Image 1 (cartoon, rainbow, N blue to C red):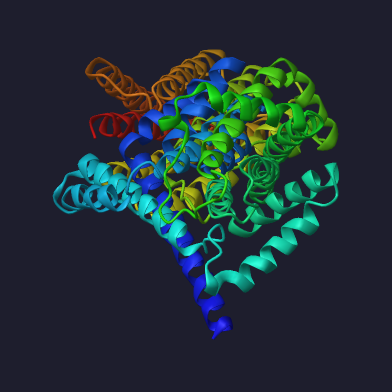
Image 2: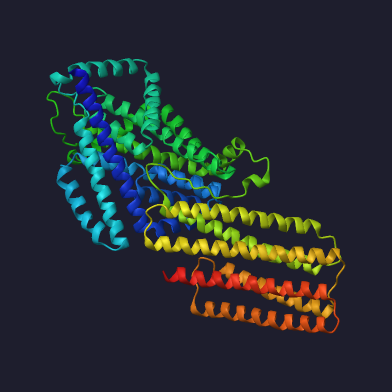
Length: 587
């Protein structure tokens, strides 16, 4: 019967933890849908300096309530070249501070009956989820997740056996746990390290520092770490330090198979947290003494959390939750203030750790990176946007490279042609990567607006790849012409040069407005540029036909017609891109 009760208790704890984690997942995804554009903008643009990067990480993690989600996202953005290593480190620092919000939520949960607010919160969110429009539905989803998170914490408190009161049916379990704690706590300063390792293992098991924090505080509440409040606080603080290291494993796992930038971002997270843990271990006794003393400065009604069924004659363990939250926040804040000045040094450490022997290995590539606890489909769209911009830049480089080859018919341009071939190969690879990535994003519950955006992004990617192929065919046409020593007359060469220049300007125009919104005047200008290209193609092809009729060089004129047709095809693709951008801006 005792084994059955123990098994039932374990399953109840796991079930409570499941509700908590599922609530966090639903809440995070709902917030992403409601504020996805703002979060994407913050992560993509608000990382100009160290302080803004820290704030961005704090802001994002405070919203999604998962430092693991933020750090995995940082790895994902670094993998695509959207974040520099220095900016990544700053965001990671802010994420560590943002995750302390969870500890405060848990600490304050006990000040009132969760059952009184959890179900009403879900009750508010449910009709919003079913009858609301996209954004209202997202807010409803967030409220449902928030209510489930509270419910999970409530059940977790009830499921963890209360060992403070020495309840008869818990005597055997109480004695076993106390024996284990006494053994672990009998090594002096080494005990702190042992509890730290326990925190690492706990976080690795549950794969969430927030869930590990909830378990730690709940166990302290219920007397698992002893009846003395200060001793329970010290053990909890040591476990929390371990959780700070354990949470880095998620980002580390996410970086497997990514490029060197993503691996460096993941290692930077590890280095930052390990350095912080080391100095916190050195100053552990004075730091915990200071934090414990600070609790006396707060009003008793703020510090103490009244716990139901608290045992009589036992030290007030209710203060532990507040003290742990204060320790967690103080530690992360001090760690940021200390290491913010050494971001370049941390960057150098991870560069030395993760070397980059081949420059091409650092070329950003898309890889869908997420985690099971929180899906990042909404925020990952920003990574695809950046990849499309990079692909568009390849098109600009490609047309300029072609013009360079065109301008030097008598020079050896084999190296330039090889470089253009690499650009064409890179665009083929990017088309495949971006398409697969966007399909992965679209398979998630992202809402109709983002679904339409993904469809437009897929269209733009296809158009870019097609005009890059056209440009490469132009390169090969001219290469064959040079090998056959077929030269255009100066006047004809000048018209081709003019047509190439117009086409290059159109590509640069489309690149400038890519995914940035297109005004009425910009759309009219693009249509005028395409009309000009069409008129030039007809005029120049008609001239070529007339020269062939007058016994001109048929093969040379056919090459000329092919070149003109390719220029017009490129302009059509550029116009399609601008028109798609216009539709995306209106949606």
